[in-house]
Amino acid sequence: MQQDYRATYVAGLIDARAMETEAIQLLSRQVERLDNYPEMQAALRRHVRESEVQRDRLDELLSSLGSSHSGLKDLVTGFVANLAALGHAVAPDEVLKNAMANYAFEHYEIAAYRCLVTLSELAGHDSAHAVLDLSLREEERMAQWCHDNLDAVTRRHAELRARGATAGA
Image (cartoon, rainbow, N blue to C red; front, side, top):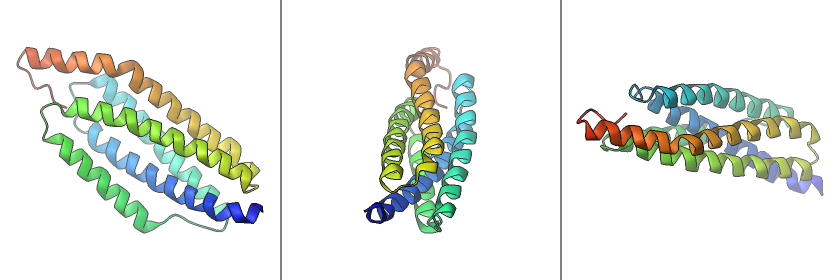
């Protein structure tokens, strides 16, 4: 029965790896444009580094199962992330759109890691639990940061706009 779950689990790991590639691209594009929001810039920089480590962890898990990531999925998700960043860059409320998107994306990542923890158990890959749980906790911390700082980012944006300053990123 565990073998039946393994294919679903490996597919989930591959998808999560592509998801982390997307996160790295998306957040990296934002970091470049957040000079007016130093706290957000610092938090996103930290999370880019965490996401790179998470991607490496997923590579190790895939390797331990005799599999590897999908270059095509990584390419597509990276491309989509860059398009999303470009789409927001032209908006006068770019930073707000990014803050909302980041909040939502962190919750998507949380859901993905929760599923992977369960799938690792079903597939009998018990050694993966601690690794996946660590990534899950990191995503939960970033989601909490997004939650806790959404008001401050919104207020900063409104303040800059009211003064006629560049309120975007």
